[in-house]
Length: 119
Image (cartoon, rainbow, N blue to C red; front, side, top):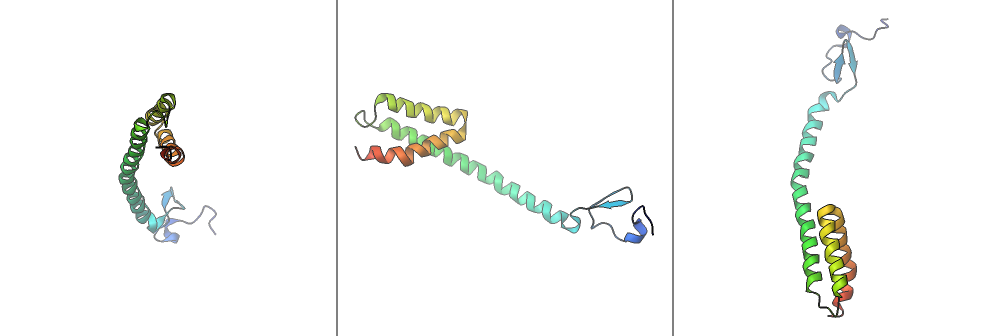
């Protein structure tokens, strides 16, 4: 028995083991390598087309919230509160996009329905 590991002659075809360092095969994906790589390419394509959609939807939410806040009459939303919401939406959107979307969602889901009752 050879203690150095199997040789190329005793192993046969080593193309399905992964890669070979010297004469020693190392674990790998073998015949599934191409399948995995093509799957990763598909995920990349999906993500590259999904990101712009998410960004546009987030910007739409932020703009909708800003316009809605700006159109509220002073009797419903004080000028100071209006300025605070608009500043939070703009700064959140510019500095940290997810923060701007979060502020817009809080306004549109929690605050706006209560303000709508007074108009």
